Length: 493
Image (spheres, rainbow, N blue to C red):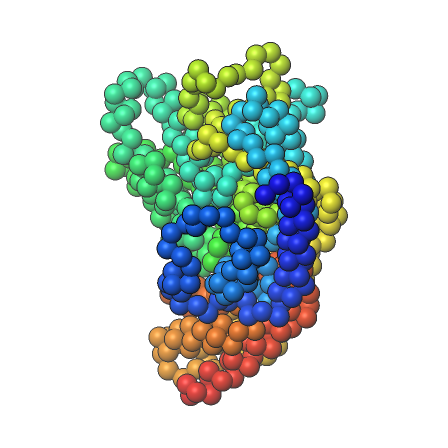
């Protein structure tokens, strides 16, 4: 493909993408193909000779499209949003144009420096403490800073590695030898609640520490008292607490842990405190939500996924650390083929030492496009619209009389179930009915949502966050929920 054909195909693909977005709401959001559907439809070896663009596009429409879950549909209410946008796509196009492997400043100075600047932009937009900024107000380099990871799971692993490094440094200060510290690795304990994302357990598995899963309270929160009690017991058992993850907007219910109380414990017990705000962190762009996040200014690290609720296409997970020393010390490996820049280093960060991979894409471009083309006001308007629609959904469900809200509706997530009083039978029957309701709603094909189980209770949890969703889409969701509920209850009773 030469430049002339590329220009032609780009125009065609832009039209194809625009047509998709204009019509995606007319498609069932959930794919109905069976596992293994694709294998019989495509050749079992790569083609020996070039194939035409037309053939490839035809296969996208006839073979790939049927197997797609349409996350960008305004009738998609599953998991959490993947709020892509056209400005982000344009940024990704430019990133693909450069096609760099930006492991350090020398590889492409603009890639490193734009990430430093844009992460400070984003940190200020959500009201992060100045400790998390790369550049101080006087233009000098700060101790902290931000870096774009692929996902919140990667961010979790990275900060757990940094926390382990901090713990080892503390043990050395107590006079422990390197050999003794190495022997003590398996006694390190990281703390999570039973509502913490699975990334916490995965991170513990990867770095080889113990994971202590603490039961949440009646509001699905990790509390100060529960954390302190777990630490006391572990210390009595000869273990070494070193890390705690608090969540601002849990996956199941969007609950907010006792951030201030957990920060108190982290400080007194010398734990690294990480705040996982992968979903709800974007809401902090709106000042009215910041009082809910009291305590994050005391954390060692903070993470939000801009690809969830900030209009930026996957992947773009924003991680900040208040002090990068332990992170860089833990992940820095020097080689003769990795040149370092001497002299002024305010904007010269080797981001390869802030993450697991060596190579990295120019992801800050799409975030830069989004923040410039939407502006802070546009991002806030998008988030407030989603929250308003979630509150309206909550009102409609309550007024119907057959549903109960199972967790406070604070952001764009509404957790509910059919009331037990509506369903004849025991708790098992109630759970079966709500699980069946989820299946019926998705089989209906007009909207898509998922359920979960919180402390033994089956619930539905539609998440509102579509980039282009309107009140009409939320009204359709209500209509489908009510219709399917009527049918399920009638059949069961």
